[in-house]
Length: 59
Image (tube, rainbow, N blue to C red; front, side, top):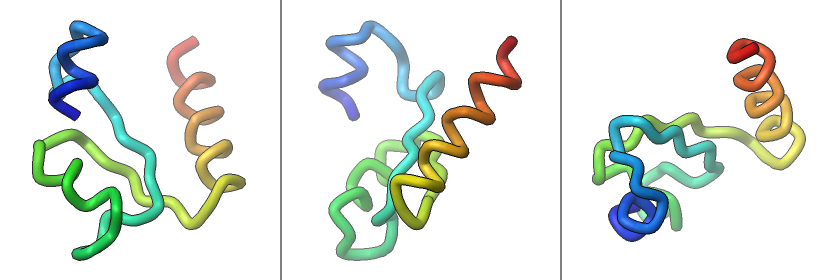
């Protein structure tokens, strides 16, 4: 997340991480420790719905 912050020139507080493995031992868990806002999903279909909803709410 910190590398992404550096590359994109966006602070972690402005990011949203949509992932499936936030649980302890999951591959996405380390990102949670950075303080980034996270939404845990159950798979690609749910990820798509979340992202579409965010986009619709922004317009």
